[in-house]
Length: 147
Image (cartoon, rainbow, N blue to C red; front, side, top):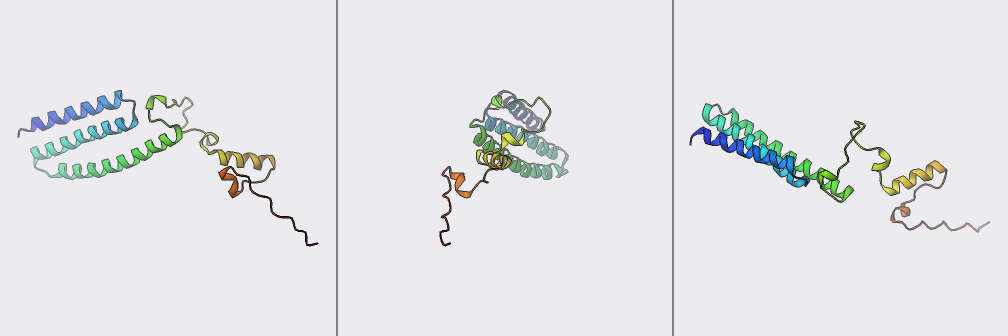
């Protein structure tokens, strides 16, 4: 096989992956397109190794496979977190950060039960009991009538 064929296929894979990352709105499809781009880079390394007989391309290609597995794991975890928080994985629905902050404030990122507990502490009210998390108010302790 001529090495030019491997390089052309790698360029094609990378171009299709780049097109997918730039045009798709679904985060899972963008992750798959990024993996396709990584496959193109993988093929370039293996093809270059075939031409130069140095075996370094194969070791880098194996390293890329490990990095790709970690990328998929982290990427899918982030997408799952996005789905749980926003009920969408459409990247066009995500707000753009205008103030340069890395993330949202802590008040908008906490659960309702935690916000309720914070407001109770700030107002001097009772703290959040374990039964309060379910939405059922905790029963008052029985009064001591022994004396």
